[in-house]
Structure formats: structure tokens, C-alpha cells
Image 1 (cartoon, rainbow, N blue to C red):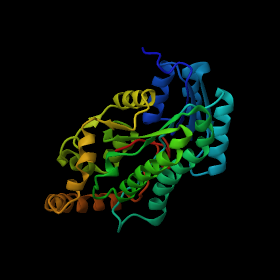
Image 2: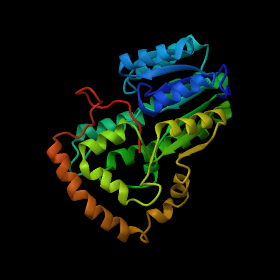
Image 3: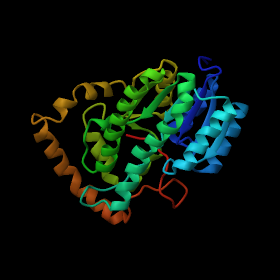
Length: 298
């Protein structure tokens, strides 16, 4: 195991499960001190216990600015600073624009966009002191619209521009900023969507590569940790997602509209029926009756 993060101090939001948990484990194994921020205090405590003295944890919701600021400041105090940040917390909601309820749509934007804004804002003083690096977890859907994923796609497109703007704003401080663009990752979010909405799996199979494959959370975490070590400006998981970024003009052009229209016409009716039958728009955290609050991600 490489020790290329020895002595580095990493803050991870959405650390209780999924990619956040995997990144924390791998970063600690490679020598980092890790501060775990999220909800699900039992999972955070257990993870910190597993990682040993190199890890600390704090329960905080990225929607609560005061709590998040206290958690980040507390992490810096415990670790003696912050060198690296992974802004990972994110959620998804089910349903099309005409179907999704207002509260679910707003919640996705608040966690996925405003939560990243708050993370960046309150981490900046610490990153300035260390001339550190931050990775913001966006998505392949930052540049690829997908029917029935409007709130998630809108949030990830917004968070990409937020991170790119922040990159310009802090460059003179010596802080560097990168984006992570995963496709479908084998986490509770994807498994939960397939369990809740049977048509979702079929929809993914009909997408062109790499939209029709699922990447392991371990592989995604390895790419992210390497991105932290190398201060990468973009991390694509799998790497073929880079093609979608480079070709996003063509993907959203009149040339591809006939295919997109046929694809959506086939997928949308069944997905809307399944969401209606499900009776909710929020995804539930596994093992609880509460909406998912920290996940990863298509």
C-alpha cells in the first residue's frame, strides 16, 4: 500500500457510507489523517473506530451552515489543519419535473449545490493556510441530461460551474480545485433506485457506454484518492466519461435529439407509473425510514 498521503489532513463530507466511506478508508491506509463529516452518527463512529487514531468524526448536515462550519473548524483543530477536502455529500429524488413534489426537488438542490457551497466556504480559510486541494463530487450527469433525473442532473450541472468558479476565485490563494465525474457507482443510491424503480435498471442498460456499466465503489475511491494526491482538476470514473464531457455539445445538439426523444418516450411513462406506485419521491437510507442524506452517485 502506498503511503503517499502520509501526514496529510483530509476532510470528507458524506462519509458514513458509499464513496465517502471508501475514500476515507483508502486515504487512511495511505497515511492520511481523516475527519469524517456526515449524518448517521453510529456509522461514523464505527468507521472512525475502524480507522483508529488517524480518524475523527462529527455529525453535521451540509444543509446547516452553522453545524457544518463548526464541524470543519473542529476537524482543523483536531488534525492541526486541513490540506484536502472531498465535498461528497449528495442525494437523489425520484420523478419527472411534472411529477416531483417541490420539497423533494428543493432538498436535492439544497444538499447537492448549497451543501457544496457551504463546504467550500467554510473550508477555504483552512485550505488557504495549507495551500490545499479540494475535490467536488459532480457526476457524468453534469453534462448529460437524462429523463426522470431532472433535480439530480440540475444540481450536478450547477455544482460543476460552482466548482469551476471557485477554482478561479481561490487560485491566487494557492488553493487548487478539481471535479469528480462518476457514472453509475455500486453504492446504496444505485442499488436503492433499482430496488424502488424496476424500470431504472432497464433504462441504464439502454444507454450507450459508459452509461450502461456500473463501477465498483472501491475503484471509484481509488481514482478519487489518486486525484487528491496528484491535485487533479478532473477525475472521471470510469475514464471513458471524459468523452461525454468533451462531446457534450454534440450530445445536446439537434443531431442527437431524435435518439434522445425516442429513448425518453420509452422510459418516462413506466418510470412515472413506478414513482406513483411507490408513493414517495425521496430515496430512503438503507435500514431506516428516513430519506437518504449522504450517498453517491450516477
